[in-house]
Image (cartoon, rainbow, N blue to C red; front, side, top):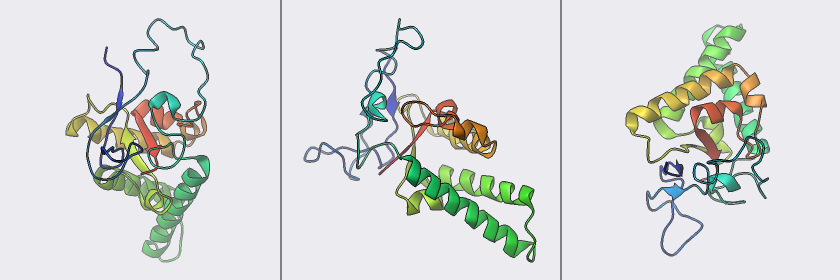
Length: 180
């Protein structure tokens, strides 16, 4: 079994002169330990990480680090506000909650599939990446943002986190929000 990799879409990059990363190349970064270290380890016996994203092989801060809660909340508020404004404008001043949710979900899916981040993600410096780079082809990437968005719309999966500050919606979809 191969260790998992973070999919590198010009966000998770490394160059010879900058070991922390740059936006110049498309070389996947190997995630430390996910599959290889956890073989034969019982549930709950994994040692705690020093910082969110350590087990994924991400940096502690700066480029290629986990997107923290403040950035994530800011991004979702921007995206939800934008969806509300669109619904308000389209319905002539009435805001229907179901229409808000539909517009929000469509915005998320289209933006994540095309540019790896929503408007809120771009404003707050976040990008979506898959943690299974070596397995992901183009068709396998298609389902990840869709599943992630549908689970995000259910709200509860986004409120359940692991030690890497990844919501359940990200864990199921095999994605991670990172800083570019």
